[in-house]
Image (cartoon, rainbow, N blue to C red; front, side):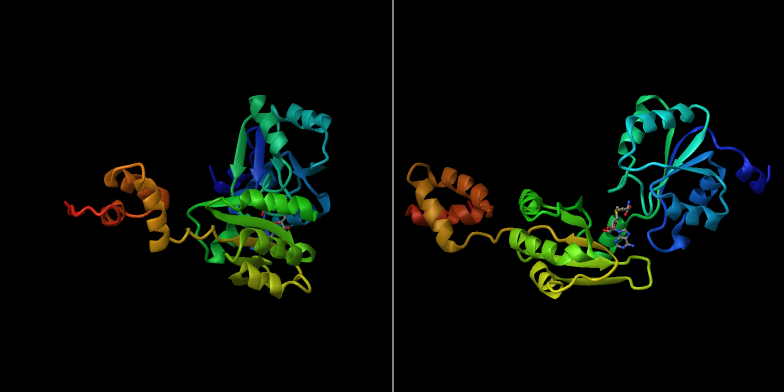
Length: 290
Ligand code: SAM
């Protein structure tokens, strides 16, 4: 069977979650274009935006609006189609469900036993993380912070202890205030403002949160923005004075060996170093390395 013939065949019924470009149409995957041409229906956040994409790939599928305000009835109507039709879910840009509608629909489709397929592709959060130059081994996608100052401060306070790189979605007009709040609550961490990814004016500006807050205090830049923030710095190891103070306290009740074990864990210091100091403070001449 020729590839052309296979590509014009109808798709098996089910829900197809299709990631679309975040700025550069060339980033639409070959599989995404193929599926958009072959589905019976495309659920779109904004039909005008998706119409341009469908025209670009020569897809003629019918479109129906599906967004955050879609009702339970709308979802049931979509579910009713899934047993016999292939339905694509797209958002205006990027990966559906990531700060975009679709979660309730996917959950309902899975619960009803329909096939759900994901066609991975562009996602601003992941692209920004790769551009930021910050640690990628452990990250938390936060999405949009609340816009009211109080709620935003509370959300940031909850994140302050998270030992992971943080990824926020932002907009130009809110950027200065958000960075100032981040600098206040998260401290002087390294961060990056990543803007207009895959578009003509793509840029990544790195600095501490304080520096970035200052840079964007007056006016936020145009376009779409992701802010990536480094994890909290590891606490400084305890100095000699702190070690002596905590050890003296422990030695009042414990043997040098037990005090050293407890204090080493508490201050995250090597046990041998703490034991040696414990022997000195206890006036004991035993060999610490024995
Ligand atoms: N689902 C999308 C995704 O996978 O990235 C995100 C949708 S969310 C409603 C829109 C936000 O994503 C924007 O406000 C911005 O923070 C970010 N974003 C989308 N496209 C971007 C781009 N080209 N450059 C930087 N940020 C972008």
